[in-house]
Length: 277
Ligand code: KIV
Ligand code: NA
Image (cartoon, rainbow, N blue to C red; front, top):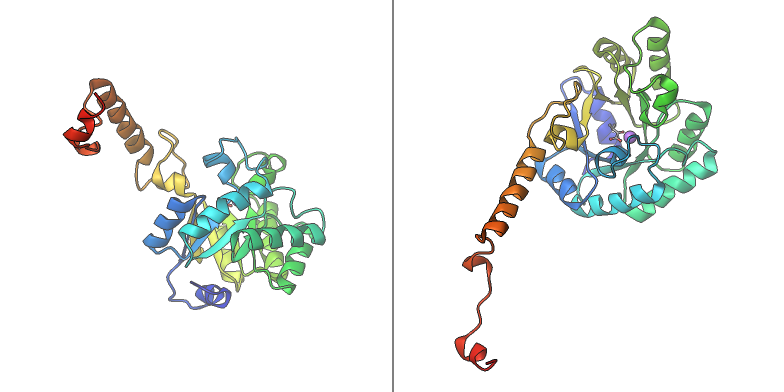
């Protein structure tokens, strides 16, 4: 399992391979990620969208993350695991942030927590947590928890003021003590500038190839949702299609009497059965 200093070092050595991060929300998902050899697993609040069926991450509760992170941890005991602090669990003061983070770490065995944004409250929480030994990953650019205030799920940092805002946000998150920062939905060349200016690794999603690491929502790369193509994600499989097709075949075989077959059934000796008559 990587350590925080090793993760930071990955950003500083020029020939290090990019860090690989994926999301996981349950035991098998985390097991697949660990067996595939990823560096970092995130139990993201994208849980709300891809597992719980909400249309944003805002309704996700601390107890939801804990429930899913416990399962993910059991599937990937040897991989550095980060849990998202959900909306409303860290912006209301350093005590709340610390309590939320400690709850997740104690309940799930997570190695770190992630917070969105660079407001004074978030920076203060980042400072308090890191000063007290809780590793914090930052998240700047598009902030899904509060995307309504950013004009929706839109690319950030395209004009000069907004680009400067993204760079300043990343710098301030680093200054507050974060060990890495997610850059979401910003132009590739802005992500390059941010990655060059920071000492800590930048982990991109929809942020081009110049980041020190990449993260995808696993359900996007697996193609769990048929027909839902996102520009920022590449589909490495069509798991949704495979899954639907398999269930369709099962249904047809049950209805056609082909399943269960002999090899799926248990036997009983004739003389035992005869005694029932
Ligand atoms: O919740 C999530 O999955 C995330 C990643 C997309 C970075 O925050
Ligand atoms: Na998230």
